Image (cartoon, rainbow, N blue to C red; front, side, top):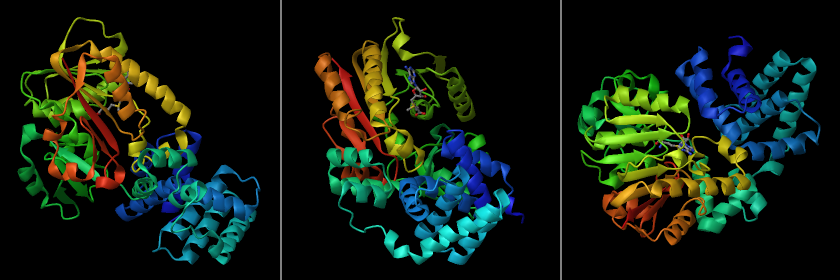
Length: 448
Ligand SMILES: C[S@@+](CC[C@H](N)C(=O)[O-])C[C@H]1O[C@@H](n2cnc3c(N)ncnc32)[C@H](O)[C@@H]1O
């Protein structure tokens, strides 16, 4: 195989595009793997190398800086070193000789013999001096924890101040493990038992009932689940298990009229429609026109007809329509999805979180007046910062005396979830180490 077609060359190409195009690693990786002619095993290696190098970015760069002594490196050379060091440090099945050899071949092919020699020298220096770079097993300072768990220092502090150091360490550890793939059975097309029995003819795929949701299935070996015929036939949706907790909290009944204020791509909207047995009405808004198409396509694929979509900023919703319930699945810092999108660690800032808190406040304000008396407001985010979650809801209740915390939230949560999650009177916070699913927050409020 020519060097340009090897898994490591594909990984390097993907890392370069990720950085230069500021792309999301998960979307880019899907595109790249589709383009390549690699077999399943090699695709898994590319995935591991790309996610791993991004996940461990600060740790790898710190080592590279020590090895090259501040020499300015071309982006691709640095990334080639990152993915080689990632293999030395975090993968134990690949022989050191093979890692060095392939890195040098790629350096010669992409650059020249001189760069090949340079890469060879840096990697051999690392192997000679390995002991200098061993990460502390029980890191204590902020800097040590940042390097051992590969998190920016401000996030280490944010997590520790919110949940304590021990829990923060468990969260960061969990974020470095490969994410689970979970799917949601379309209950309009049959129940989970029947669905689980339909995979026996596909021996490379294994399925297991989720303990977090009666509609969820944890699946391995499927590759890109969106390419599977059963997905195209509308038998399931791809959804993280934590997100599957939202729809049941409405105790949805056929005939309800629900507003999903930030709906695209429609994961929770379609779950709600399935729970309502496709009877009633859901108004699904999203600010981005191009994302509305995703909700429509998902509804069509799943055989759902009760969702009416509209491209609209919910802050501009000025008709007099009132709803039985509103879901505000707000735009947020997304720190809870770091296991699936490690890029978030390096691209979010504390300043951005402050901006998001203000937007979330405006969105809550906008939907509050659209809820009927005795109606439900569910607020959710896929993050763990207190400002976006518990503090946001406390502030809303302080300034909206016509709402009160709805303590029925826990009736609709599976026992297994209640055992591990952090639960308040009317909210739940799932952290990534609880179930190895997304970090997720949900609060339930009711209008007087
Ligand atoms: C967390 S995502 C929603 C995910 C969705 N609920 C699901 O389960 O598939 C937040 C969405 O809010 C949308 N959004 C952001 N600001 C908005 C606004 N002012 N009005 C309506 N939608 C908005 C974003 O485009 C994004 O699609």
